[in-house]
Length: 224
Length: 224
Image (cartoon, each protein chain N blue to C red):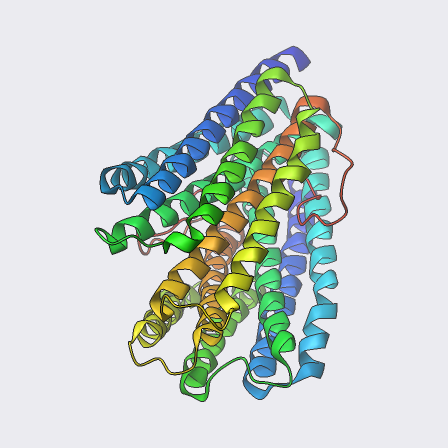
């Protein structure tokens, strides 16, 4: 009975890994589209989002089947619940990448970002995508030492986001209100994407090891 | 066996109703704090947020116990999963009200909102809080005709949010960039709060009736 459970759970974990690759790619492309004013790439992210939604529905159905057919209890049950929450966060990450792509498309052929802030978004994008790719690493390798890096990358996104705010609130912001509005929203999309990525990574550490990672106290989603 | 399940599920639904009241009150107070520049009220929302987090943890534990002890299948299982998702969204609504309260506190004693946009936020607040209170109504009365109103209130928040954007992007916005940044973020908090409220209401309709409400195609969270 438990062997069947583990085969099914491994399959579910693989699907979550695949989903994390999808949303990492989406944010990588959306960031590129933003920085390079690339309409085609933005359109690709926008049309690919439906696949992320489908993947989430599939993960939920798998989790439902696991619960219904295997009736897991104790840690096994919490593991399936963690996987369900992870799928929901991954879908939200896909939506946030979609929002970035839509912003790039909305202002095309003009760039959304003033040159002065492009380095912030290049870095936030890099850190956010790296966080999402760590989810796949955790699942594939079962190597939870990747958990150490989570805090570093998340702090980086938060720091960049805070600096961005300083720049925006500076009395000398010369790029106009519309640009400030765009940059505000985009900064928030990256910040929320990174938050969700950390949450997913921690839940997946629980799924593959049965133990929650023990760093930080500041986390919204320590509940499985 | 199934009678025990129903007793437990009713208890869980009651706890979700209580949570929805908490987050409705939080957003009502946060909105008042914002409009009336009321630091005391903002501080109350900020310190009460921990109770929302506790309530969510309690709901998850109840759901876990239901799954572990009753091993529900079919619709009963989907119902418990719907309740788990609802608890997560309700916690997020609490966080969004918290963000509104923190914005009010951050600029105190200055108002965050220019007079010109206060009416937008008064209305968005009213509609958003009404949506959250409909969750309680659905659970307490099992009256799902409230579902009709969901679309109306949600559309209203979206319309107001769009109008707010028009005002922000107007070349004549005279209130400065910092103010535009604050208003952008606040508008997004209300819009996301309303999105989550609709999602929770629909899941609770499923929990109390076993059927998903059938309106709209535009919904992020039709997956249970």
